[in-house]
Image 1: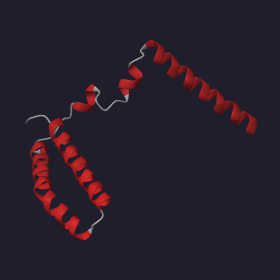
Image 2: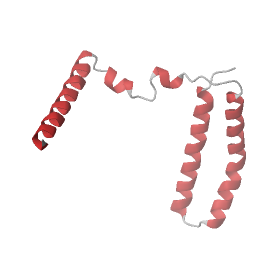
Image 3: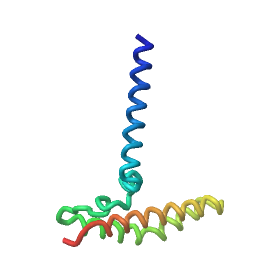
Image 4: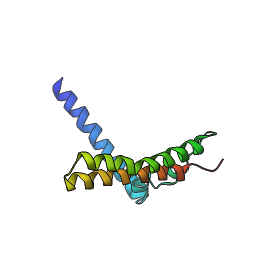
Length: 107
């Protein structure tokens, strides 16, 4: 029974590898682009009514509170490395909110 399971598992792995190889040979660029976040379908986002406004408000609110959050964190933490990490995370969050707003089509 154990030998049968191992045989089936290896057969499945070989089959999967063969399919991936066939796709890679048929369309070399397709494998990389299919999982890419910059692929066409990833940028076209439908936003229900009011979603763009909600995203815009969330971005404005985040920008407004960034300085307050940073000042509070700086009062609490004096280590420069941790401060830099905090700022980096803040900037990443800001970019993410901006990207979400940019993906949403005008209503």
